[in-house]
Length: 493
Image (cartoon, rainbow, N blue to C red; front, side):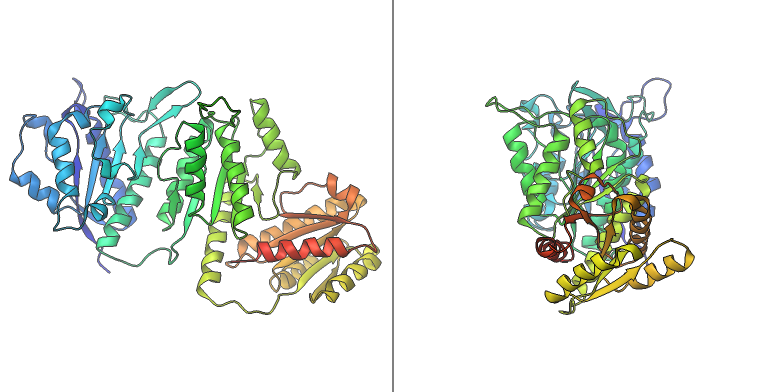
């Protein structure tokens, strides 16, 4: 199938493409060249319309430009403090928005992509931009340390790339341009899902990973929120985060060395750093929507530099802060991305096929020495209508691994029984179950639980399980009830 050919109009102020003496490129030149490289990898061919503002008078404007604006599939506005103050820039933008031949203003504004070269500090200047694009997606080519308020540009005024995040921003922008074009000139989608994912704004030290995650999700056809920066005001931030989360099926949180900036509270109330604030609001979302999940990543041997971030990370590492439906991963970022994509593809599979009303069995794994206790638990689960596949394992060799793999593909839930003296054995079994689930399109078994006596369960920690259960032999009623609740929640599409 031939690639769609799109006309894209780049609107910018002359001052944003000034070439310093001795340099061949200005800021817009660098952007243009990078997009020419990146857009073909997203499956579209582009006819660019870019009037050479640096070669024309500032007040030059004719019907040729207006026609080019009208005939463009996407409008790229390079927003800076200079852009709103140039009448021809606002004229181009308003003409695109109000072109009734292409659609309504609301339809047109979704085809406006704001490339923010640097923030506009003066609200009076910012208000010159048309109100209709206030909610349009922004693609930032700078970052701000909200604790120091320092602005760090991705491209120097000389046109040289200053930060590697530039290419992540270009990839994210190219994916958005491709989606805009494909809505007008459809082609087969990478994903058949109308799926939205919340990628939480991290501290500055995770900014590059944040952009990488967003870019990869978007290139796979998923919609990514937040659509713009979180407000600085605490109450506005709360409302904005909740509204964005309400549109998503999961949230992604990247934990770094710092806790991030703290939104300002005009009322003097105690506020939370942005990292914890988004985690807490996502946890609240889990309570409202039982199918919602949090995916949390921290690199191995992470040493936070702030006390509150150390407390936050330690809570997840110990398991005390984890919800039954959470996925907490300390493996390399690439494996974490794969886990997220696997879950999204599983969601697609479950959403596009009717699910059988039949409950899948529960795989119950224990050591031979614990058979009497496992039998009691099996009886309790059978009494509430759950089928059990018992498995007795001692050493974990190739034959035992094959047995685990064979049975794990038949169930949504696997429960590993743990005693105080066999924690290493339980870690190996849970690791095998995790590897099996991540290698499958349907991510089975989705629930990987460890069950132990109360004192043992409280001390046990594993990144490979997403549910910890505690109880005492001959008194499994409450444990079985808790297990059933978590299975129903975690296996719901």
